[in-house]
Picture (cartoon, rainbow, N blue to C red):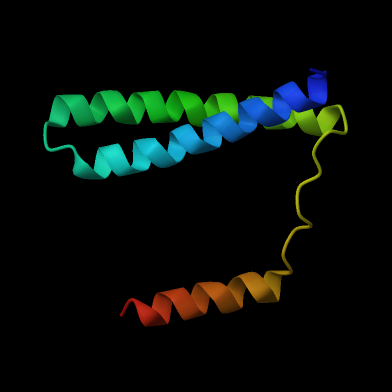
Length: 84
């Protein structure tokens, strides 16, 4: 397996892990256990960021182009008005 495949597999694994943490945290009633899962999620988020940065530096991953400011404002307005 080459570096690109390993990084992509690792990123996919962390992405799945983060989704699982979100579900577990939402369902956990014990505050100490919830805090532990939140810390684990935070560590995985940091790890994901570092691996993504490495993948970008090596040219293995190219993120989507940044959204235009007016598109961001439109989405923000829509989300804000729908929650009121």
